[in-house]
Image (cartoon, rainbow, N blue to C red; front, side, top):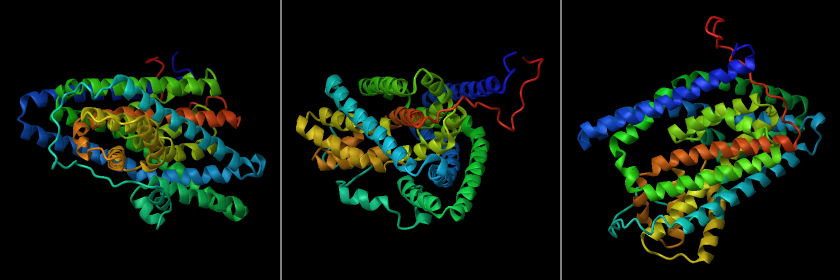
Length: 440
């Protein structure tokens, strides 16, 4: 009987959810393309706007959860690391290992993007008409510097940071609160217990919100295809194909790195997060997958204190897909304009992106803002953003899914180093009823 154990029923429910997501994506493509063929451009834009209502509502529901969930889980994770049973050096050791992995993954992502865009030269053969000099890009960015980045780290008000979903600032505040809870002993435990209760409530709210995910996914895909059609994918085929090929190589490298550290079990962990990856892909939002990713990692045996500490920080410091896209897109724009960028400038660009990419979490279309800033810094035509705006949504889908995968593997690796990757704890959702024996 396939549902004879809670673990197998959990696999069944996760697989069914994945199939529903795939079905919603396919239906969105079919409906969107049908509307694109039958409606005028003005009517298609209006129809896309109606579809976007569903997507916007769903993403707002997710954003409603993110700030309290990141704060509560990170405080709990840090407070648990300060427990006597884990030793006083636990927090520093886990933090160093986490940042070490993030630094290595970031460097690998940026270098891979740099290598692949120079190898494939996707912009060299597009022969697209250049935007006129007075054309303005939809997004602008000033040259970013270390001062701006460091200043942005510290919130002026935690209420403002949570209201704006400034993940990086929430992480900084949460670290201070978690360390303070550890230092205060019994008094701090009261706060950490409250944070743990908040996290549990937010995860339950997440389970309610996720029931609307297939509808939002259908609407997101249908909206994009209704206005753009499938033809835009052909026009930018070389650019998109090269980027997705690069993502496939990055996925392979991340998986190999995870296999070296975690062992064969990494296959099971990656398989278990297929639904969050598909959710991030179809909604083009890695934030949308955060709660479900956290839940699935804990079910796969990653200890709660490690998952609660590493995963939130990863959403600020370990955006592998977004970082690779930045180097790929900037040099693609330079190639489209026929501008040669020396290797020395490319390496300087890589170092700049190592810093500026850390503030992308929680900012809509943040990759484009970082790209605009990079173009300004290296005196490349900012209007080149117009070349990629049309397909940015389809590329954002891939980089969002990659961010989820990278953070999940990073969390599993740190858990393995800390010897806190326990047995698979896949369980049945408490509000789910298993199929009857007749169904099995």
